[in-house]
Amino acid sequence: MKMFKLILTFLFGAIMIFAGFKHFQNPEIYFPFIPNFLPVKLVNYLSGILEIVCGLGVFIPSFRGWATLGILMMMILFLPLHIIDIFKEKPSIGSHQVALIRLPIQFVLIAWAWFISKK
Image (cartoon, rainbow, N blue to C red; front, side, top):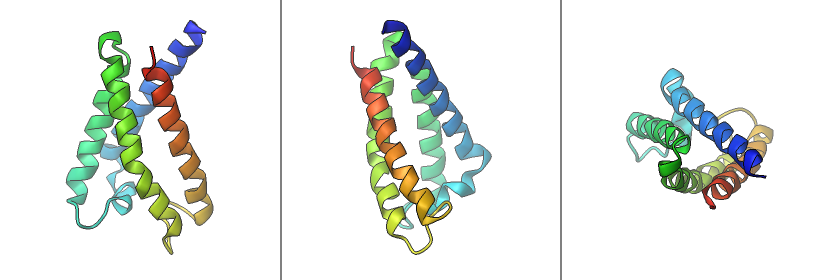
């Protein structure tokens, strides 16, 4: 079980780092998710940086608890954006079907971060 959790931990860290870099590689994908009253570019780049930093923190045992807590909080913070996207006439990325698929994935990421954060 310990090896399984370690594999899941490292995979999760890698996914978060990859996702963080995507905010810089293709930022336009994320812009429609960000509410108009916020500085869209700044929020996008800050969330990318946070994802990278927390993803890296997952690999360092002494920072893992804080990193997974940070990811957990980010995923909970992003959850309303995914819910709102389902009800938009034109979802941010793809169709309504894609938006409906993304929502449960968000819950999986939340549960995954919580699982890793437990000692």
